[in-house]
Amino acid sequence: MSAVATFLTSTIGRKVLMALTGILLILFLVTHLAANLLILVDAEAYNAYSHALISNPLIYIAEAGLIALFVAHFASGILIYAQGRAARPSSYKDDRWAGGTSKKSFSSSTMILSGAFFLLFVPLHVWGFKFGTYYDAGNGIRDLHRLVVEEFQNPLLVAFYVVGMAILGLHMWHAFGSAFESLGVTQRDTLRRTGNVIAVVLAGGFMIIPLAIFFLGGGQ
Ligand code: HEM
Image (cartoon, rainbow, N blue to C red; front, side):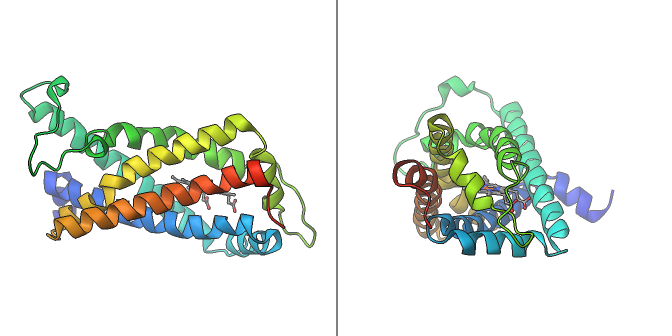
């Protein structure tokens, strides 16, 4: 086995892989949120941005990289969870906050469940939007704005996104601090607070999109 393979199959290697892929996925979500907030501001600019993105040949490399990040993150998360369960003498029914300086929280003890939700969310989301109805905005540009605004007229879909983004926030609440701790950063309190802010901004920011479209309309 090569040195890299040996490292990645060790407990610490898996944690580092999960941390690095998690941080890159957070960066993707930050840019994805910023881009999608344009929906509420300027339909033309949103469509132009998305057109520029998908007509760039490098998009295939970026998409392959994104899929690899998701797969590596999910796989290392599941392996670490399974390893933890196998090594744990007591059942998870005994799980409870250990008091005092314990790092355990609802967010940290539900990471595997909140993460698993995205195995359902991401394929459904990409299917609905990326591979959803193709509306033409003219000049060969896709009217993605129209599709998103139409989709978020459906209250069930809005509810699914609001609940989904709350689960995203729950996952992020613990994820950011934990990732940097796995990479050896020791400023635990600062990391935790920064992670909490990122969780609220990402979940709240994404939630605003379906809610604003449903209640206020889709922007110009
Ligand atoms: C209200 C929230 C969101 C909106 C309005 C939104 C919108 C979109 C749209 C319109 C696309 C298609 C882009 C295109 O074809 O050019 C897309 C793609 C995608 N979205 Fe979202 N998104 C949201 C939240 C999320 C979240 C929370 C995640 C991940 C957890 C996510 C992951 C993705 C991925 C992986 C793609 C495929 C990217 C690609 O293949 O280029 N999105 N999103």
